[in-house]
Structure formats: structure tokens, C-alpha cells
Length: 310
Image 1 (tube, rainbow, N blue to C red):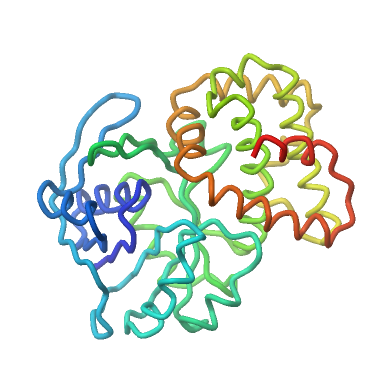
Image 2 (cartoon, rainbow, N blue to C red; image 1 turned 90 degrees about the vertical axis):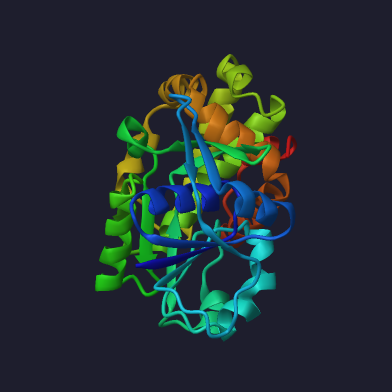
């Protein structure tokens, strides 16, 4: 099975390294300094927990030709970068284009660009930091899956063989993955959570351990997430996946849970450092969710307070 990883940031590097290690044919599209790093040394990963280092040579390209063909093209970019690559993806003949991109405003534009039949969607439970060519990474396993699991879906929500094949490949690569019937609801729920958490982290200078010490700000974060969920409910959108129903707990209990999470290496690697690297994307995500808030007419005092720190 042939994969093209379109984008060689943290997520793209994790995908390339793990899929390559599992025996799949992996090509990475990168540019500039990152292209040179991958060409010379391959994908260099370091497990955030164990410190174990992994090195995986990969095929690297700096442009996607119209007649290049891969079984799956995994678009691992920030939302702010997607529009620029849509014409390239449109011209390419690969049958399955998987956007692994934060997006809470729907996918019709992507479907129009690459074709609804080719469009697939996903989002990772992974993160990390790239420094000097090495990606220190975290993958959502074990108890963390209670919060988020790598998820893939069809644009129209159907179950398909290609969807099962994709999830199976990621599971084989050591990235626990599931499928979803409504990725739009999943991502709207995700953005409701990450904007509140991200803005709280910005108040503390992207220091997750500092946030963990502030019960007041953890309570504010819980309140912001619940307001976001009320926005979705008013719009007729179900909180997805259903396992997140524990967010109905009282704010004081959620604050206790968040304090535990924020005191972990996972929060440092996958949350706090991400807010540093992706501040512009976080601004875009907040602006997108603001459109949903406005459409819903729900009052959001906690979200309004958290946005000041963005």
C-alpha cells in the first residue's frame, strides 16, 4: 500500500515514521530545509515518554505531479495552509485524499476541489515538537483514548472498505485508530474543546504545569467547553464521540480531571508545545467557532474571557 504524506511537520513525520516502520510504502512531500533534513537523515522520532529514538529513511519529493498515484494521500497540514494546495490535489489522480486537518466549518469546499468521491477525513490523537530535525512525539494510547483516539471517516459518513483499510493500516503502525459516521460533528466538538484549553494555556504562557496549579482557570476552561457544547446543541449538532458525555460532570470535578491531565508529559508534548507552534491556526479555529457561536445565539461568558488570552 502506497502512502503520500503531504506535509512534513510533527503529525506528518509521526505518520511517515510509524507507517514506514510497519512496512508500508511511504513518500513524504516536504519543502525547503525540511526537505533537506529528510533527504539526508530520514524521519527522526523520539518518544516523549521513553526517550527511545527511531530513524526511518523515506522517499522525499518537493512537488506532487498530476500523474503521481498513491493509494492514500494524507494531507497533514494546518488549516491555514490547505487552500494553497487544493489546486495541486485537484489535478492529481490518486483515488483517496484524506484531510487530517482541524476544521469546524464543514468540508464542502474540499469536496468541490478534489471531488466528493475521493474525499476522506481524519484527525490524529498525536502531537509533539520538532527541533533540529527531530520530532519528539506522543501518540494517544491507553487511558488517553478516553479523551481522543485517531479517527477517520468518509465525507458522506458511510462505512466503506477503503475506510476500514485505512484504519487497519494505522492500527498496524501502532497508531490506535477508529472510524466515525459524522466527522463534522466530531471536529466541531474537538474545536470546542481545544480552543478553550488552548486559550487557557496561553494565559499561562503555554505552560501546562502552570495551568494545572490554577483551579480558577481550570474551572474557567471547563465552563468554556460546556458553553461550546451548548452552542453545538442549539445548532442541532451532537457532541461526538459519545464517550465525551463525562463533560456533563460538575465543573469542580472536571477541573480536578484537567489538573491531572495538565500535569502529564502528554499535555506538555501534545498540547502546550502545539499552542506555541500553531498560534495562527488557533486564531483561525477560534474565529471559525465564533461563527458557530454567533449563529447559535448562545451566551458564552467563559469563552469570551478565555479569548482575551489568545
